[in-house]
Length: 179
Image (tube, rainbow, N blue to C red; front, side):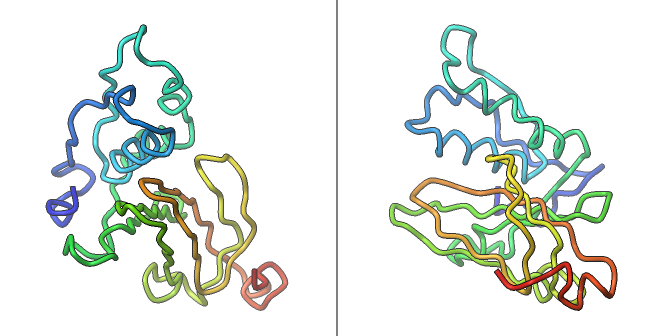
């Protein structure tokens, strides 16, 4: 998906990663990884598991916050289209309401640290986010200034919905403090 991400866009070409059979993945993290990559690329979320093989994957397929990305026509892009560059494992995009979606993916066999600069890489003025929400845990992570960082286990991912600060008060520190 990384190689063709530069030509993918809403209303144009969509990245089609094929049918998902989450029952073939070894761990919950790997199931979330595949589903998340499909959602971040704007691919159809096509289920190929059967009723008798779906198992615990049903909760992944039914994640309303992830499905909403697809419903909105969201199409993200990696920070780099060079597969050998670690930035190709960080995907981002903007929703119609002005919120950002950022996905960190660990394709490696070891633990990796990932980060994104809110101002330089996403273009959020002042680099201040009043809310960061984890779409898999369904929990708000609080606010962030300048950078969001995460450490990921092998074959895992995290998807964040980032709400930029909008007012001067929020950007001045009252609604946005260092974490």
